[in-house]
Image (cartoon, rainbow, N blue to C red; front, side):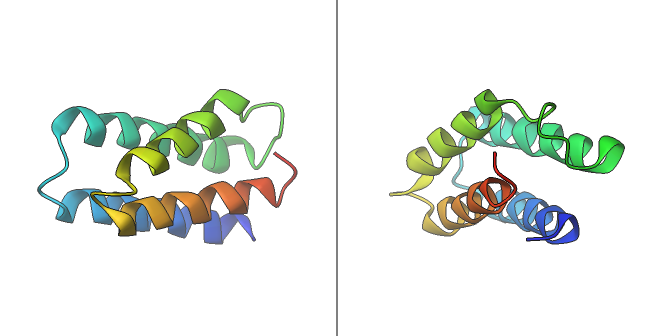
Length: 90
């Protein structure tokens, strides 16, 4: 998966978060922060493995699990992003 595709996935997740009114504010803000952190890494410094901390990946996986039952589209998009990042060996 190319960097541009990863950015598009982040934008898709952002759109889903905006459209899903039933997501609680804390979950929404937490996931938006994660998306912002990953977007900043992709935009400012390319895909540098040392800069994407495993904690971000683990937080994404945790978010996907949390959304799985209530918001499957959000969960699926997060899992696709995690897989895309793992394609780069993360």
